[in-house]
Image 1 (cartoon, helix red, strand yellow):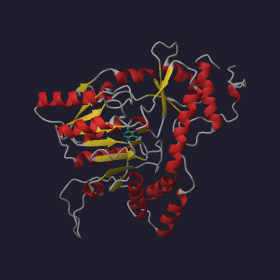
Image 2 (cartoon, rainbow, N blue to C red):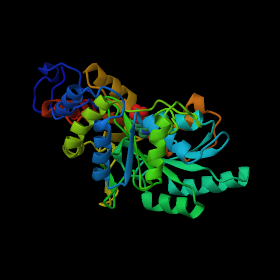
Image 3 (cartoon, rainbow, N blue to C red):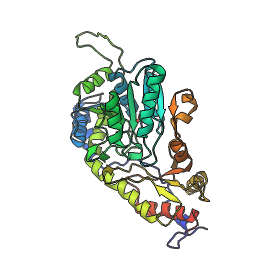
Image 4 (tube, helix red, strand yellow):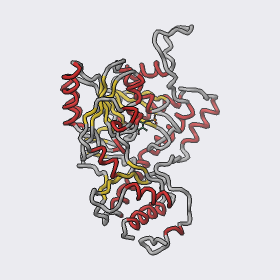
Amino acid sequence: MPKSSTGESINLRSNLEKIWLSAPHMSGKEQKYIDDAFARGHIFPMGPNVAGLESDICVFTSSKACACVSSGTAAIHLALIMLGVRQGDEVICSSFTFSASVNPIRYQGAIPVFVDSESLTWNMDPEILRYAIQARIATTGQKPKAIILVHLYGMPARLDEIVQIANEFDIPIIEDAAEALGSTFKDLHCGTFGEIGVYSFNGNKIITTSGGGALISDNSEYCQKAIFLATQARDPAPHYQHSEIGYNYRMSNISAGIGRGQMEVLSDHIEKRRANFFFYKNALAELDDIQFQTEPSSEYFSNHWLSTFVIDRDSSVDREDLRLHLEALNIETRPLWNPMHLQPVFRDCPKHINGVSEDLFIRGLCLPSSSNLSNDDRDFVVDSIKDYFGKG
Ligand SMILES: *Cc1c(COP(=O)(O)O)cnc(C)c1O
């Protein structure tokens, strides 16, 4: 029977419930907004909680305008429409991401062009970005229409260089900050560097509305237009009149009520997720063959949505074996994202690849990182990993 570092048998953990990768964490503050909506009969999409949540997000991120919608994916789709992305256009996108960053490009009939990662932040490599833009111009005679830049696991990308290249070629950036609400670069919020920033409030994110998303921009016209399109594109007329194709991408007033309560505890969630990261990093420091995704300098502030590490190439431990071992102990972990250029559905898309994301995918693991993870559970995760590496 395996022993923990304190000598106890680790499968005597009293609480045998699953330790989740990233669980919702309610504070109790959500209820008053929902009760208020019920008391007033505001059981519909949009409504005062949605307006309130939009204003909370503007204040928190110091952005001028916000539009709350039904998901982060819907927000990315609307952002692409706003920037005029159409059939046949090319859109540059981080390859190392979740498919929701890319799918909306296809909704528009546009073509994703994948750009690989650098090994410092694991996000889009600025040099490859520059090369990719030049290569696409040389091949098609046209500039890519937009850049979707992802901040993975909360880690800000190399924003100075990427924003500079985007400016040089005059290509707008959509920041997919779905995982990076509360992360900053040089004290400015991820999501505020591009034309439009996107957040997600899915159940596994740092705060949740049970499902939802938002766009932010300093150009309030984008947010007004996003809400217009998200509410079926109804022209201002007493009868039903439509001059454009609309969507039903609205956020429910009830969901937004959850979001308002969650905004009250967002800073606390960020502190707790970061505390998880530093706990893991310190507790596992003796394992020489793992390296955590770490802020490259004090300019970078990650919300550490997920604590993640990679196992050295020459380690005797295989990532998938470790994952299965932890799963057998009821600990949910997950490989890093499987890069988009490796996905069957995006097989034929142009790509500029250096091997970094494929390598991270093979060697990397995301650890249980919930803001409501108990100290006992965290200890159990650490002890189980140490045991597996033979240092229990
Ligand atoms: C979660 C996520 C999304 C999608 O957000 P939803 O609200 O689930 O639609 C997009 N991009 C990234 C990187 C994500 O992690």
